[in-house]
Image (cartoon, rainbow, N blue to C red; front, side, top):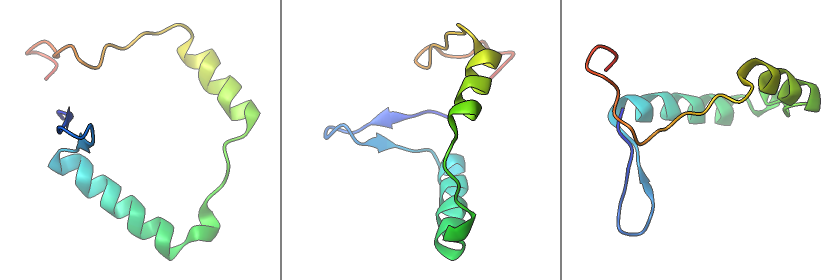
Length: 66
């Protein structure tokens, strides 16, 4: 899943990601009552799980992982 930016700096999203985002958009429009804010406790929990993990999104994956 490659993400690029056009000259205006707008993200260009690949087709598989578009399908997911379109589905999410339709679900939110149809059921806005399902949306819930992220709590401070949830943020702390995620931070405790990932710790100081660093991800370099611009580095290509090795062929075995692509």
